[in-house]
Length: 141
Image (tube, rainbow, N blue to C red):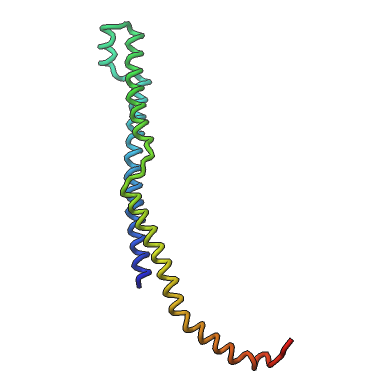
């Protein structure tokens, strides 16, 4: 019974780990989408207000470069945030619980098998010892 309980605990821990991993992946995808939107804005120069503000101080070409550089900086920051490879603490805890539960289940299963199989092995050994002379006779090489 303990084996099934430990396997159930391992399954729950694995479920929590996968849920945490899916949540982290969804956050990362959100950052990539944001970075993509900002990258498109950099190439298309949709920030007309900033362009016109820079146009007051610089010429049209320098104003376009200023807007482009600012958009690329924002896109770069979003890409850096999205590409972090930090494993969430909750995922690591769930993985540790799963591993301990599976190890305990394996040990419990082996212990249960050996304690239940030991009498059968003993009876088989006694039967074999009793039948050996009848099966093979008293042949000596």
